[in-house]
View 1 (cartoon, rainbow, N blue to C red):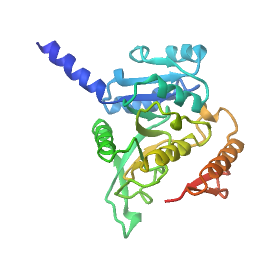
View 2 (spheres, one colour):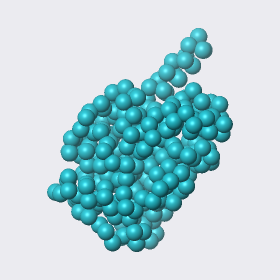
View 3 (cartoon, rainbow, N blue to C red):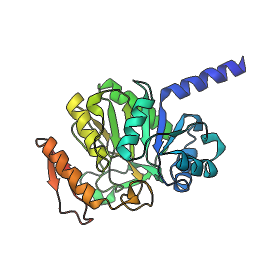
View 4 (cartoon, rainbow, N blue to C red):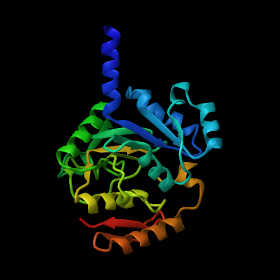
Length: 268
């Protein structure tokens, strides 16, 4: 009887949501960053799927990953948009999926929020990641949305204690979707695929949801491997211009970033 209850509880746990981690040439980093973070939050390894580019990459990951991750180590496609589109087809429709990059060190929640004096804002490690994920999917279902995300900057000064339902950027390293096999959601660009995803969902559903009191610790554009295996600045400019041309009423080009990377500002 006990084993039956255990089986049933585990079945419910797996059906709640799955975690997808696309990874390329980061077979060491994924261990010290994202997988370590998920283990710290006691996330069951059986719901974690790691997607790699080819057989050569899979061999490297098999040599470094704990054996408990081997079963859900999947060969997908090379290239970020190709991999994300592959993952979309790999999982069933209506499946709740949390996407996480392979170099996420930690996740934080805003505390001591002071709207009038933001310099006093502070953050702390998220207390219960599993509960946050469940609550996030519950929230978007209640509001008939299919995409949720978190605040894109790891800085409590800019964060705020409000959940938004309008057009806000849903950053790529950490977001959740209710999976749909919809041709209108197929990604077409590698650079700024997260901006494209945000826009596609908003055009289709007229809503994306962002929890602006939550952020992650990750490094954009600098971690070795992944998309950073090549010079991204030219691709960023091309993608920014492409998105602005395709969605002129929803975007503005921003070319004066100190980083040198062209950005797309969403209009809301």
